[in-house]
Length: 244
Image 1 (cartoon, one colour):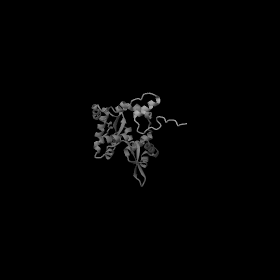
Image 2 (cartoon, one colour; image 1 turned 90 degrees about the horizontal axis):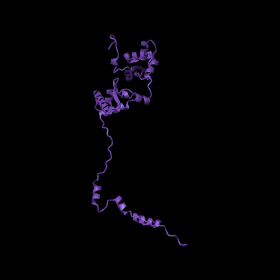
Image 3 (cartoon, one colour; image 1 turned 60 degrees about the vertical axis):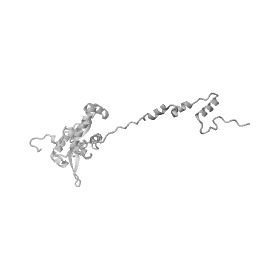
Image 4 (cartoon, helix red, strand yellow; image 1 turned 60 degrees about the horizontal axis):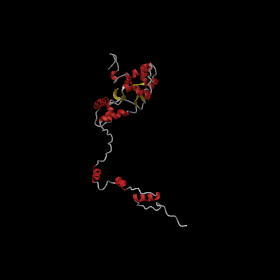
């Protein structure tokens, strides 16, 4: 039995053209070949006898990719970044600390930068502002967004300070730095547990005066000033007989 004839595509040349491929296909289905020359030439390159097409393609400008947003680095933007990030202890950023982290910027230049940022926020309708807290600054949401903040963090339960805690805070505020031993003598009772509680609340901080003797003193924090609406310790009420 003689071998059957190979199908049209059995030994297809490597460089077959679209027309040859169409003719082979038409032979198989018994129809007329579909001419693809005009379509292919329109897709691959402009018509040779139409110079305007070549000129159009040559003069059409290429679409440039959109440039990414650029944030210029300046003392103002660096200060904004520091306030946005905050610090590990959640303390307010003092002008002195801010100037130490910026090149060629003095501490007295920080308040004008804060004012400039707040003007920009107000003009843009931003929901945040920079507020003074103690001897420093903090970025916070505007008051009208308090309810939104509470939705994220839940309602903040206001805790009342005991009379013992208030007494200890008052003594530390006026006598700082003060050791637990001296505080106990002034109160007439041990105060270590109250001091530890106030340190956990962030109202007092521990200061190691003499590492060799392991002597610890206590001072108030910026959170203490914020709680009592004070800008500095100089605003503490004093009697006429008390030293300034």
